[in-house]
Length: 299
Image (cartoon, rainbow, N blue to C red):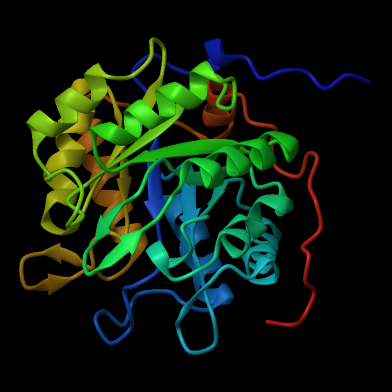
């Protein structure tokens, strides 16, 4: 039987997609004890974010000493626990590898698990005190592997040149519609977290592209509100911002998601469900075409 393609017309016109970035590569429990770092904690956070209104959960994993890792077994374990809890939230696995601390093959390893979405950092930049290298050859190979495994690239752009990179890859047929862009503003080395920067990036997009914004630190909420007003979508979570407000640490990822959901309701933006996101972005659906992890060691 032929698998039926998702129907984008099922996506409500004003619906808001909330993505929750639960862990990231760098926040630690020493900075905020509520940062989830074990597979069990990350999965619990993902489920709670889905219950609070997030349709997508962006996953990084850590090793036993809280250091970033690209271990497919840990990614697979998180997904297994989320699904076992009965959550249908869309899982978005990171290929960032700690922004300059992992090799290209390590970074691409989670793609073989066939997640519905995986991050696609669309260019190099200074990243704080590091250099985050995403060479043209790496991006082409990553795009090829994502296509082979049925993974939707989340095209992460930290500055306008990254959008231009994406347009070239689109012209080469390596990135295919429907396009899902994530604008990351406020990284030291990328575009500053300003609404005028967001406007410029949106103006560069190909027709029909879908987009979201991720503001770093205190820019998270203001840029999210701007995106909601502009008709875009929002990413929140402890990866990007460990604070709820000045001087007050966030209690959980779900707390940050719930705040965005409340503001969205005031703006008349109903929350998109995971199934509606699958229809809009043409995702394969949870469990379809899935590959087993390359490593099966206990985590």
